[in-house]
Amino acid sequence: MSPAAKTGRVSHAHRASGPGLTLRENGPALLVPAAWGVAGAAVLGVVSAHALFVAHVVMSALLVAFVVASWRDMATGVLRAWKLAILAGTPVTLAGVAGFLARDGTVPALAASLPPDALLAVALYGWMLLPAPAFVYTGLRDPAVPRSVVHHVAAACSVAGAVVAALAGSPTGTAAGIALVGAGQTAGILAATALYSLGE
Image (tube, rainbow, N blue to C red; front, side, top):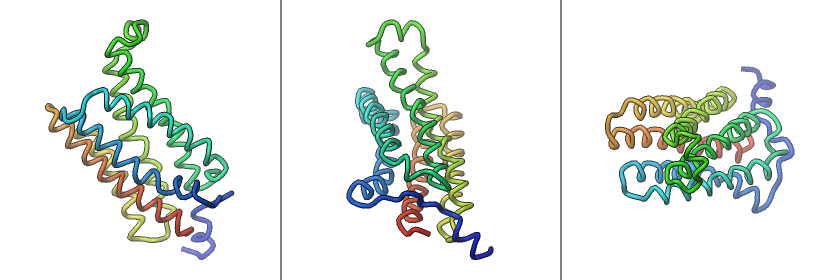
């Protein structure tokens, strides 16, 4: 690989600085395992469906805030790939919120017109699979071979975990798929955070 190719692999266009940047850099590394942890716990009955609903609402707000705050920083390259993933994931997360509202009858019109299980499945499998292309792209653009492998493993875990969850015949099996996705995506987002922080 030529030096020019390496230097052009990751874009940090309009990169800002300060506490806000630190939160944006490291926030996903905290939110990803937290989100999948709550989802897995809800499937196993450790936390209530209401707790998962609250997590969906909070995640929806954070996703919108993240994209708005980071729009210029995520203009090209790897960061643009993640911006597209987050943009696609926002309506996916909102589908989960609608699913909860439809399921518990909070909004009667919504409950009558939309199947809650389908909406919740969109949220679950959407966030399992949406990051996979971004992880693959990040791995291809990351010049550090050990770290780039982590990106590809994260993509593989995302797909494999979705398959495990889809084929599972029990809450334990579904939780196992979620755990696989969560572990892979957490490792991948930590590697992506390191890539961005180091400016490689």
